[in-house]
Amino acid sequence: MRGRPGVGEPLSSGQTPPLRLCALLRPDSFALTALLALLTALGPMSVDLYLPSLPDIERALRAPAAQVELTISFYLIGFALGQIFYGPLSDLYGRKPVLLAALGIFCVMTFVCAGASSIEALIAARFVQAVGASGAIVLSRAIVRDLHSGARAARELSLMAMIFGFAPIVAPLIGGGLQTAFGWRAGFLFVFLWGAGALTAAWWLLPETLRARPVMRPRLLDHFRGAALILRNTFFLAHVGIVALSFSGLFAWISGSAFVLQDLYGATPVEFALVFAIASIGYLVGTSVAAFTVMRLGIERTIGAGAAVLTIGAAALVAAGGAWPGVPVALAVPVAIYLAGLGLAMPQAMAGALQPFPERAGTASSLVGCTQQTAAALMGAVVGHTLGATAWPLILSMALMGAATLVLWLAIRGREMEHASAKGE
Image 1 (cartoon, rainbow, N blue to C red):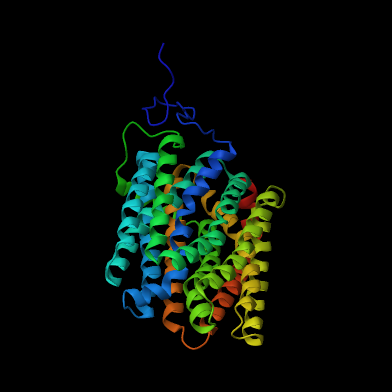
Image 2: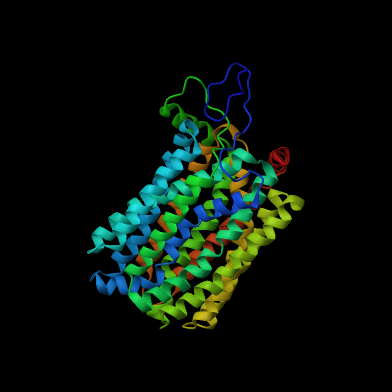
């Protein structure tokens, strides 16, 4: 007797296959959520861990600060461009094989970063490293949408964010310690080991969650054409706007904090890491609150609460910059408030953007990530090229993004948006 078709097998007309899990992790298990968080943490680890080393890279490779800043900006550009392709490819060939290929690229290029002998080589390697890392976050979101919808998907994304929220807390501390003991190359070797561990875990444990692929595969170009339909959806665009604006404020902090705290405020690499970790606790708090409240409050109200907290943090940052210039810890608390708002708003906005497209979850996830990272790259470049003798370019950039997020949420919270969200929940 012939069995039912599984993942990736041809379907007869009208058949809907079960989700076949050949790996060890069940779709409703916390272990799968933790594995997806491990994968998505590759991105933050690749940036946050080497931030304490930026001044040392500047000296060791004899490069100006603006060029060293490009190792972040080009990483973000690569992260944005890579996400364009992974989603459509995974809709066509499955989540797992595309993810494993992305992780392989990431590991190889991280090792190349560790051995770079010039700033140009490091910038180029960082770009390709980011192309690999982008696959992990795109496909993790797509896997969540394969398995869940509505507020449940938002809860899973918040749980993932809560787990990988430890990365920006511990990464600068690890990076600062490695920088002090061994120099800047040691941080990249640590990230390489992290990536190799993630690749091994995904290979052995991750299930294929794409439930069905048609007998006649559509061309990849057809998937890109489908992106045009997604981009005409106002519900999608509104939530992507919230993601992009709030996340850009975070990357203003990531791009400029090392130079502000160490070069302008005189903090050591370890002191910088401590301030960065204190600020990052806010994100952990925000995602934790969201994970346990979004099922009750709903996606839109949780986003609104996050947008309000973002704005409070932004206002407090402006006040702190004016009242206590040159004091590193004075920036930590307002940034922590901002990041708490980010933790409340961003995972829910991502879930809201993916909600209308269960059949194109990979493509929608690619568009969310590409927009998010492009906005972040532009913000990083602006902050990097405007920082000078004061911290105000960093402070004002974060303040502007926080206020803009709240304004956008207020503009879209009408009955039509609430109704669309309620149908998804």
